[in-house]
Length: 343
Ligand SMILES: NC(=O)c1ccc[n+]([C@@H]2O[C@H](COP(=O)([O-])OP(=O)(O)OC[C@H]3O[C@@H](n4cnc5c(N)ncnc54)[C@H](O)[C@@H]3O)[C@@H](O)[C@H]2O)c1
Image 1 (cartoon, rainbow, N blue to C red):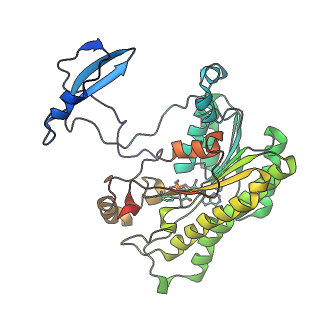
Image 2: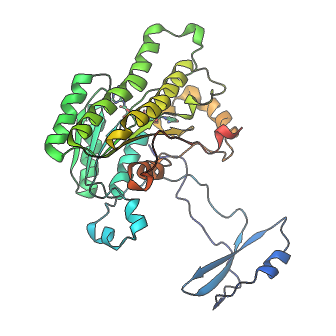
Image 3: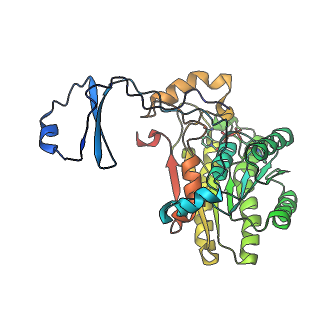
């Protein structure tokens, strides 16, 4: 689950002429400075009414990908109380969050982020019993907050209903649902796609997203409780990937994105928001298949940021969409892909 890079750090490799002075703007002087090529970048940091000037050698900053956090720091009440009103809006303080596919990968990382953003309880629904149990135990051990795991296959309506009822009974009506469970098939030409495989993928990615969203929304509607539902689609619902052929996955994710818009429109009257995250290529186990190694080089080269997304690159967006900071947002499909879909 650990991505390739190391923690992004801003390392001032050359720190010369560091000076502390009273905060004085000097824009004319900086406009006269030569722009290209630069071997170092002048950085002015304004704090406490002072300016600190440092020089950073070009190329000395690290790769932008970030290693998975080994610790999870829950947002304490004491810290929450010190936040400004704007930052409080960005938190998930007091909220019960369900994440499908939270046993590993992007879902697990979003679970970590939601706890750090103040979630009061975390629930993981996943088809993988062993990984799910492990993930729930680890999150509880690291944070002390209640974490529930239910072995749920998102194709199984009855299992979803039972698991959601158990959440309501133990933790209360959920506030946030993030649907990250999903599978991928790629490198299968459409003319050779096996019907059974095609139906199975649509059933997990699309029908599964609907069944979980519907069951959770029913509890919110009945309780007259506002809620936020976040579906995880893919940029593949908007663009057609290259070079691998994967018509079924692409169609399933286009379906998820449009399902999000449709549910957002229908459930606005119940104060339930539904938005969609559409990631680009992410460095997770889903893509950790030897057959994809050569293609990964092509994917990177077609991505302006020249990297795959790290496993925690969706975290900020997931927290934002779950929180009240996105209160006027529903039916949106946010593409987060390092710029891939720009070309
Ligand atoms: N990794 C990427 O490059 C990428 C890109 C775009 C979108 N996505 C989407 O993001 C989501 C998460 O992907 P990931 O990379 O973390 O994958 P992952 O395989 O690491 O994790 C997926 C999780 O979903 C669970 N799951 C699979 N089928 C299930 C089912 N029928 N019922 C319940 N749980 C099930 C798995 O057990 C696993 O824990 C998926 O929907 C995927 O399509 C991933």
